[in-house]
Image (cartoon, rainbow, N blue to C red; front, side):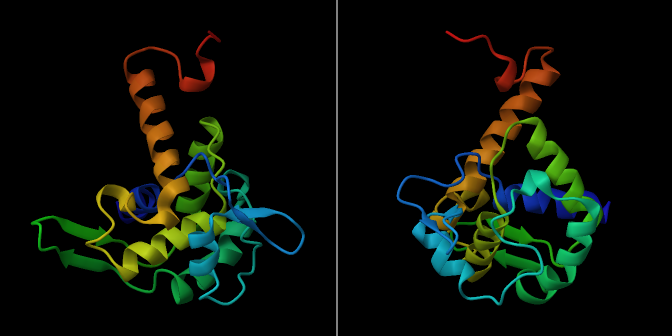
Length: 174
């Protein structure tokens, strides 16, 4: 159950298909890391053991296992529960489970989500910094642009599968 909650929190906080948006910044090797807000937010944490330009869909059990201690220390050290002035409640899981990250990677690869680790973790950090200002799924945070798109694509795919239809990637070209 805890793994499912953590996976749901990761999906809620970081999925975004249009990953490296126009006007995005890059690393020294010209690899896109996300928009300017992602770059600024991710600059607040030390270097990760896995390059933050890595696509979430490319995570392996080995890379997720090496990444989790860093996530627990620098991104999600504890659970966050906040009652917001508008009556909403924000809950963000703490810690990290390699198996949950790998499951998310598998789900994202099935829907062509191009979210990278910088975008995922910048979104999580933004929501933690301003939980009530983020709106549903952190969508109001510029750091969550890519994550929000991944959530949209993932939900659309799940709805299509439940309805017995095709996934967005299987739709015929028009």
